[in-house]
Each structure stands twice: as C-alpha cells, then as structure tokens.
Image 1 (tube, rainbow, N blue to C red):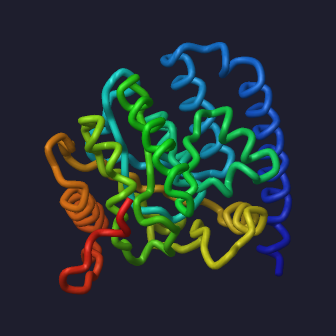
Image 2: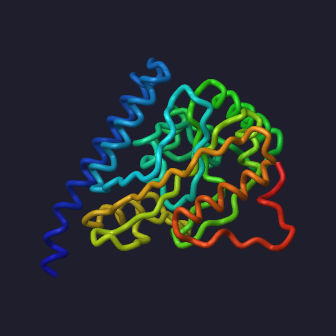
Amino acid sequence: MGSKTSGFPRRVLRFLRLLLHAGWALALATFAYPRGDQVRRAQLLGDWSRKLLEILNIKLIVKGKPPKVPGQRVVVVGNHVSWLDVFAVDSVCPSRFVAKSEIRKWPVAGWLAARAGTLFIDRGRRHATARTNMSIIEAIRAGDCVALYPEGSTTDGTLVKPFHASLLQPAVDAGATVHTASLRYLDAEGRFTMAAAYIDNMSLLRSVLQIIREPMLTAELTFGEPIRAEGMDRRELARVTEEATARSLGLPPPHRQPGKPSGPPA
C-alpha cells in the first residue's frame, strides 16, 4: 500500500509535465514549425520527441546505424506496438509518418500530426490511396524521411504481422533506400513488457496513464542494414523487410499461407 502511495506524486508530476509539453507542441506547430526549412523542422521534431521520452522516463537504446536525414531518399519501416513508436523513431530519425486517416480526426493530436507533416491514407478509397501514394513519393524525392508501419495495426510486441505490400509501393516507385526500425519495450529490470502496447481498442488516455504508472521503460530501437527498393517487387520488399524486422527482435517471421501475397493489392 505504501509503495503505491509513494508513486502517486511521481505519476501526477509526469502527467502535468506531459500536458505542458503538449502545450509546447501546439506552440511549435503554430509558429515555429511552418516557418522552418527541412533541416530546422527535423531538428524541432527530434528535440521535442527526445524531451517527451525524458518526461515519461523512457530510456532509448539505439542499435544499428540510423539513416542520415533529411536530404536522402529514405523510408523507415518497422513493427508497431505503441503510439510511443513514432517518438522513439523521431528522436533519432525525424520522419513524416504515414498514418490512417482516422487519426486526423483526433482532437488536438490529429491537428498536431497534420502540422508535423503526417501523410494520411484512407485505405478504403482507391482514388484517395492513389493520391496519398503520390504525396508519399513526392515527399521521399524531396528528401523527407518517410516512416510507416506496414503491419497495418499494433501488436503487443510478441509477434510481427505480415507487412502489407501495397504500403511499400511508394518506396519502390521513388527508388528509396529502406531501413527497418524494430522496437521492443523493456521494464525497469530489463525484461520484456507490454506496458507500452496500444492495443484492443485502448483509449489514448488509458495508454498514457498505463505508461506513466511504470517507474521506467526502455525502448530498444534496432536499425537494420539499408535495402535498395529500386527494381524490387513490392511483395518481395514486404517479405524481406518483415523477415529482417522479426529477425532483429528474435521473433519468428510472420506465418503465411502458401501462395498468399504480402498484404492486399493496391
């Protein structure tokens, strides 16, 4: 009982600092971010993301060699466990993320995501998907690092789902270099934990409170060897990147039925 009570002030302080940091994000998105050039925007995004991890007492361990951004034709792909994934990647490799269109409707967070250059995709509408793919290709060719989660949904971190090949088509068309960025979360004792997992229709607030309750978390981010997408078939790229992601996490590759393609067609 005493240990729970002693942790309460710490959790309250973290939550208050998180609210202040969100307010700072609103100010940056309104005034500084739109006026900055590509390099300045990347710097602002990286600084804000690192501070967020610090507030939540999340230690980031980076393995492998992150891509140099901005200015290169780079696409980052990986497994998806939590909303924290975005900021773990951004703290090392500031990126424009590809996200489902529903996120744009989220109060405050959706507006911030749009201001930060998030590329929203509506997978239920073919023409909208085609337009988004063109926007992604243009962003890659302009030197923005584009990041996406080809699994299409989050997991609890105990498996890697098959990657949807259609989401990787812009990387092929833009002749990008693809880097896998695999993430897993560890507790204060260095053991695997699902405390950061954002799954099962969990609300964002519930997820935040769950993370705040943890004394400390470690986000282990592993970058794989660069993969040249130019000349590859998108299904081949999906298979190669999902296998590389699973291998770096010490997990088995996604199970596929014989003859089943990597995700739905575009």
